[in-house]
Length: 382
Image (cartoon, rainbow, N blue to C red; front, side):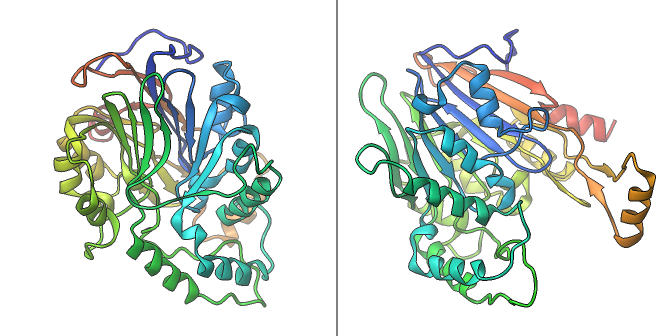
């Protein structure tokens, strides 16, 4: 583990691979540099200081021309904490392909969206709204130059590939075909009540159609776990991913821990078969009301897997406060429990020279409220 003295605005060299993970208490985003000025963006969250999508704020601070240098934008699934601001990102990334879960391409999914779009939605905040906007943006693009339809991610499908200079690729490891079929059956079982105002399609977790990604540059590779969880059925979730891995020789050096470190997404075989011993692992927090991920127990479990573990921010919340005491009093009277996500936000950045050996260490930098997971556990249990 090394920490250099670079400023956050120091760009990678053309011969460096980068994995940047951003996370406040609600939301996450991953920015990838494949070397040679090729960038990719996975999911979206909002930088609480600039009030803009974290990926755009960061890349512009590096003087990256987002309109030309971003090769793809991935929406791993439609949950709000992964979609906030993603259409703004895609609008800026004018040369990028849009990649979505294979579930989005199913006719049943369109039927579900149509039935729910007929209801009266509350404004803002819905990942489904972002998905609608993404599709609208696609329609405005030149069909001969850009990508008028999304690339649909399914298990073991190459989504982007570079063959010149240093070879690089992005591969989807999920969802499985069974997961797509099961998710469509679940979604169709919900019928919206048109007499009520709804904000989003109901959560039908576990999120079996979440897109797990493998990013490779030369000899280096990272595994991005999205929100995929472990299921008893071997055709779903992480068991399906492990069973269907086509290149068992690839051992990923970096790992974006799935589902905010929850035990429901932890699978022994992923660590044993798909990752190097003691990989470089980053977890984003999830804080909503009294629900906080990862828990201290989750952190201990991850640290037992690898000491090279980081948090983009501590999973902490605070009681609701408002400058107007009347507003605060009213909210607290009408709500059983009200919390807000404080300004805990950070950025874990890992870089390595493409020419470096696979067993060489990653250069890790922590910005904002990012911290080592070990330090967080020590703070919680001094």
